[in-house]
Every structure is written in structure tokens, then in C-alpha cells.
Image 1 (cartoon, rainbow, N blue to C red):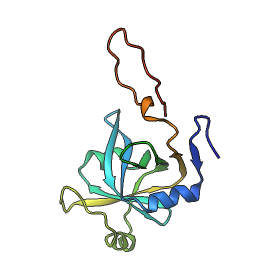
Image 2 (image 1 turned 90 degrees about the horizontal axis):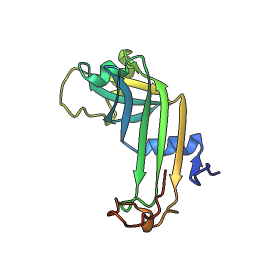
Image 3 (image 1 turned 180 degrees about the vertical axis):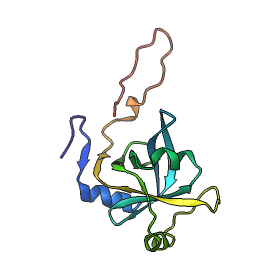
Image 4 (image 1 turned 30 degrees about the horizontal axis):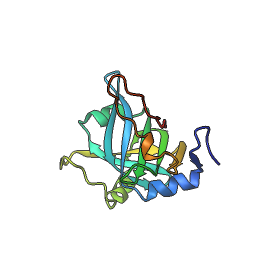
Length: 157
């Protein structure tokens, strides 16, 4: 199935499969009343995105008990083909010591090396995804034209 722009729409299982094969995504949240995006290592664990972050970080403060978006993608080096998946869910801290011990075995290293990191869980309440099949040619890649030159085509996503 394709959307109105001609991109292949991915079903829930395809999206979850792509998520499971990835390890890096971006959390979209609000920090001090402004939009924020931060990269995060993650794992898909029992139907949820799990990330590890220092308890004093803006990410921890900004996502705790809030609805957030989590985005993951993969593109060819020429940017002609690829995919993206977006998850929406309410983030919460994992506090159960049994679950925390289980999460400690996942590859969720903290980039800061701090020992006060906590686990955040974002349930996959809503997930959407698209696959880009490479229908835009190189001529569609736009640059700012010099004055008086005719603009080339632009491929919108």
C-alpha cells in the first residue's frame, strides 16, 4: 500500500521488525516549553522502546510521564532509498528491580559513562512507517540557483 506521496506504507509488524534491527533513534520531547530532539541508544523490549539516560539529564526530565515521539530510520548513502519509523507513547521510568536487572543485560550503554543512569520505557502505542523506493532521480536534488537561473524539480517528502 502507498500513501498520497507514493511512499510505501509499512504495517505494524514491518515497523517492529525494523525497530528490532536498529540500535539508535531519536527521542522527540519538550524541554523548557520548547521542542527538543536527542539521539538515544535503544532496545525493543516486550513491546516498548527502552533507553538508558542519566537521571539529571534534560532527556530524563523532559520525557518522564509525557507523550513523546521516537524516530528511527535507515537510508542508503546516496539517500535514494530508505525507510523511517515513528513511535508515539507515554514515557515512564522503569522502577521494578527485576525488570531493571533484565534491562541491564541489554546493549544500552550510556554515552556519558555516569553511574546514575535510569531506564525509560516508551510503549509502542502508535507506530507508523514508510519505505522510500528511490523514485526521485538525482536531478530532483535541489540547490539554490543563481539569480536568473531556472529552478530544478524538487522532490518533497
